[in-house]
Length: 177
Image 1 (cartoon, one colour):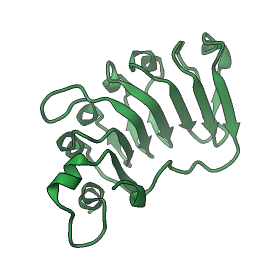
Image 2 (image 1 turned 90 degrees about the vertical axis):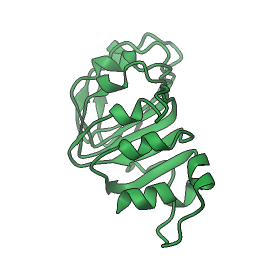
Image 3 (image 1 turned 45 degrees about the horizontal axis):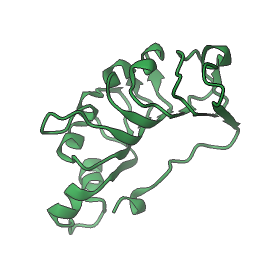
Image 4 (image 1 turned 90 degrees about the horizontal axis):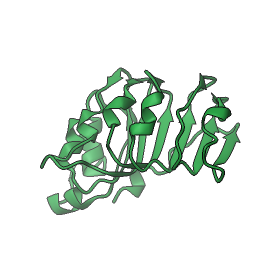
């Protein structure tokens, strides 16, 4: 039951009180495939989420809260081996986006993701072409991911880091409380 553990923030049988669950700003499914993302809509305070799935990811639940408000993300990790349509994030503010082991339909729609400052790609040997991303300040490439750098060099302050190290999630289940 990855969602039960992710929402509770603990693997123990005794779940924390509702106020601490609803007030939590971080959520992780901790490398477990979840199958659907709807539970995120019930957690309006969550601004950082690390989510994994093995099939197609419907990103719709990540775009709005239960109250219908546009959700904004400080950090959003989409991990696979799922297939994702980034166009579903059009108009959604995401400051830091991590794509790890996912198949992306097209990267062209990344320019429609509002406020994107940092992009991490962990796509294991894939070569991708990114649209111009004038607000992007950091691009990090893991696992032999290649990017056509001419397409994104519209920001002279863009920092690009390429790492041969394994990508590790920025936080784990012990860091969500």
